[in-house]
Image (cartoon, rainbow, N blue to C red; front, side, top):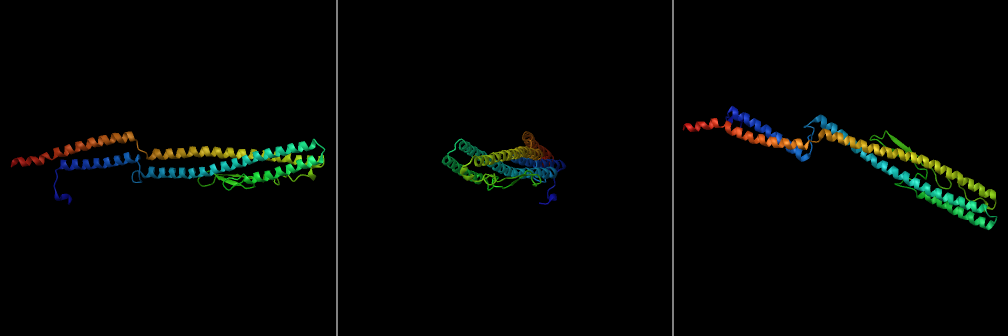
Length: 271
């Protein structure tokens, strides 16, 4: 129907326009109440919408980085567990050397030397088994941890060889037949323990950095998400009050439209 097919009074047309605006506001308020957001698209508020999108996207990227940090933490912990076990075996081996020095029986010394070699083999196996997620810091492998969304902030964690060869613990010398042979191997064990302690300190420092960045990343994600919400979320109390007021306005508009039509209806009384 064309606009001019039916003639309305000025009062009726004004009231009708007001009711249409009220209906639009009701629809907007209903959308906000159902979605919980005052900005659902770029049409609502382009500045807030795109800013919130940027914050949310960065929060998502950082959240993905947290997974990598968690994996790195476990890889370092796996290496530390291996170092602890290897250190324990070396200390046991030192006990064998001490026992060997306390006796002059060559048979006993040879037996203790054989036990030492068995412990060396177990050290190799422990170093090999200290892997996590396909990475083994005790087999000279390195890991790189990315902290920010564009991977410009990173930490490289260097591994080392923690097997008997890497720790310079060679096979027993001459079945420990002489005191000098035992003392030589015992010195190598002392050096190995010193190396492991030094590597443990380095891994602990790296672990502290990673966990600190984990906490920082969690805080940043929370800050970004809160910022995005502040730009887009609706005040549900306010929108509820708006809904009640608009419903009242709509009811009053209907009454006003009825009253404005009475002037036209009065013509019927002439007949």
